[in-house]
Image 1 (spheres, rainbow, N blue to C red):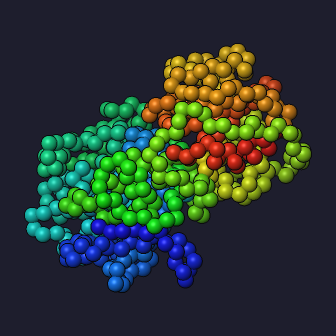
Image 2: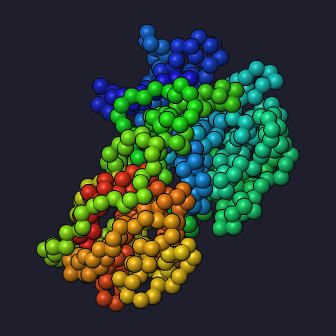
Image 3: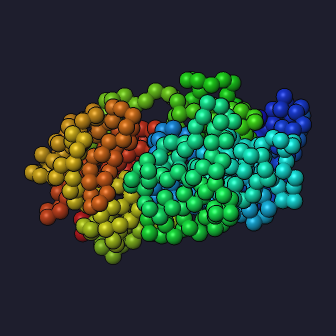
Length: 537
């Protein structure tokens, strides 16, 4: 329905997304009205999880909206790349969306088109709701002709399928379907036609994610099942109530969120056709995600096309309060990385001058899974064992800080510290760690389904160790290491560097990986500086 440009506001000197209604769409009164409704809804909804409308107007080119720029990807793109997400990530995304919907519901606005394509995943860790083009506005009529229903059929609520008035509980149902799909990789309803898909859910009992995926926590399963109750009166009545239920889950189970790739600054246009070679289309998702996607207007079918380079998320990012400085924009190449591991310089083993222990600062604490930004300086994570310190330059954020794991993220990728590896998976099945450190690293280098570089010996500040780069050959994430109760996976089509250090009575693994679809070389430019500055206290 529109062309979206990445632009600069000359008065405020900030980047924005400008959405210009296409001429042929502007001539259609109904579609032009949706454009106006989107502006009205977004203008009155001021919330960190809603893409804001900053200005609107018209010029000879046509009507336009100025939207907040979101560097990220939509949830459709991430699900096409990863199929399913960790339950904690799903709960965090659900919490953000539920809060956004709660804000809208409190103002009498029902979104009516909650679906993965209308949920943006930003670099800073937030999920944002966009596209209020078919929203039911406060004190408004249903906004469609008698006997018709607006929305996306795969995410219809039963009442939308029946063509009756929608309520906030309808948005809750749509969010329940999104969470079900993110947990299982499946859509619960199917049919030969759109009508059959819509009608299949009328009166049908709520599907349980745990029936398809047993590692889904019982409490999260209960939230999704309640959201999908066919009776609106038995669901959460609005987004705020559902958010309260998800908040309780996340206090006990903080998520492991991944960040997106920064898109180019060039203006982009909407796709002309569907199919391979449409990589640049994905970039539109990073421009505020303000495309109007309803089932009655099947515009932009390419949006979220997994054939292109991911625009956003999945894999790592920086501070939640500032536009991340993480990774330089990748090209929109559709070619996966080659199996040959990235050649990168061996870390400099020259010892750094000893800094007094008192100079080390503690890491900030992520809140509800949002990474917290770190200033440049020397840090010593207080909860991590063994005790270590390292130096960070600007652009790093703390994503996780526990007794056996520390995850640091930036635009280019992530650096993770893992204490005392207990399990490896060289043949896909679990093996206990045995033998010398050199033998263990050799077994990791032989992991089935990967290509590896030569195992290299190194020394970092007097700590001897080994380094190896692993590249996955297929589309499936592969288990590599086990630490405590957690298993570390190697992402598809990615090259990851593993550095193992002998600290005497303990071992330390440093895992350096790029943001989804990115290059190991890019993250090594800054992650190596962190690794070579590391010393045990």
